Structure formats: structure tokens, C-alpha cells
Image (tube, rainbow, N blue to C red):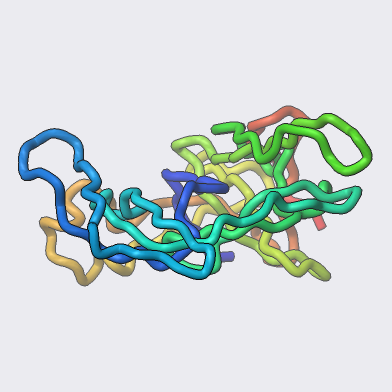
Length: 221
């Protein structure tokens, strides 16, 4: 098993623009928020309209020509959302209501961190619904253990204690290979070695009580 300590979480969706942005002239040099200057030379054709916004990464003013997307229509059993084919790009698409990446509850010792609303509205067939996803995290004193279970196509994540290992587990040591060679000033507040628990039998996985966020009590096949 490969052990990593995870402190931050992922955000499921972010607002972006649907075309590659083109830099325009900056509007002001004061400390106030960046303003968007409408470049007189930006002329759009073929039904496209000029969009004046800010870059999704740097926050600098940008402008581009884009053709508005028609509202997406999804079949029964699907909900409308977006996907990101490239940096600062966002396109509409449909996802199944039971998509495997939608996490509705935490498991393997993880605790809920944030809840995001993926869709709120009326689906095909007239059903009004709210689709939410939960972001999960291990406790600060625990470790993420990434394991590919037999017959699975995705990696499962287990929250593992870093001390007081239960029966069936043993203490191991994780070495931060980056800090081992990086300048001391870069990793001054990051330990070079950290203890963690793992199953003595590599074929086993941690066993948890039913309660959310519970620590593993041992290992099982």
C-alpha cells in the first residue's frame, strides 16, 4: 500500500469559460479590483458574441468571442452538469443519477468535510430533485491509504491511524522522499519520517465499525 497524508480536498466543479481566452488591455493600475476594458478591436461574427470576463486562474481581464450554448436536455435517469475539456474551459453534458463518482456518504473511517450541490431543478419526466455530493477526509492524525481491491477498477481510500495500531496491524515508517533531498528551508516544518499503521497481511484491508469516522479495529479479507 502507498501511504499519503492528505490535508486538502478536491472541489467537484468550478466556474470556467467555454473558449480559450484572449488577453485584453488592463483597465487600471490602482489597488482596486481589476476592471474589464472592452477592446474596440474585438469584433465577433457567425452568431458569436463578445464575452468580457476575467481569467479563471490569474483573475486578469480577458475577452473572447463565443456562441451561446443552447440549454442542454437530458434523458430520464440523467441530470445536466458540466465537464472541463481544458484549462478554463467548461462544456455542458449529462451524467447518470447513479454516477460512481458521486459520493453521498463517507466510509472507511473518513468524515464528511463539505457538501456540494451538483444540480437542483426538474429532471426529464417532471421529477424535482436536488443532487448533492459529499467530500470526505481523514482525521488530521490519520493517513490516507490508497488500495486497489481485487476485481475493482478504481482505488479505494482507507483512513489509517498513525499510532496505537490495533490487532492485525503493524507500525511502519513513511519517508518523505522529496524532503530527503530538498533544501532544509523548504521542509523546515515537515517531518522527514512519519509512523503509520498497516495490515500485517498485505492481502487484507482495514475493518471499521459502522459509525462514521470510526478508527479501524483490525484487518479482514
